[in-house]
Length: 101
Image 1 (tube, rainbow, N blue to C red):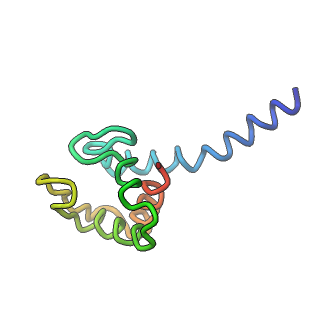
Image 2 (tube, rainbow, N blue to C red):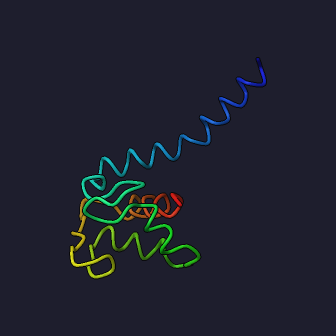
């Protein structure tokens, strides 16, 4: 029983950062246009992670795009600027998106 409880606690500890960043994405309105596993208006976060897999500069580029917006990479619908997102939060969101593969 103790062993099972230990695994459960460990699992919750590992999952907590994922939920925390999903909460951040929700609070910054990212989920209005994106979802983790499916395309909404913008690409899924898993598709973004797959596209930039192995790209060392992807996190910084995505953090900038989160704040400034962009267009043309995923089709004709532009991503609006998100000036309310701080640089620190944009970096946290970008790292989380890239971890969703």
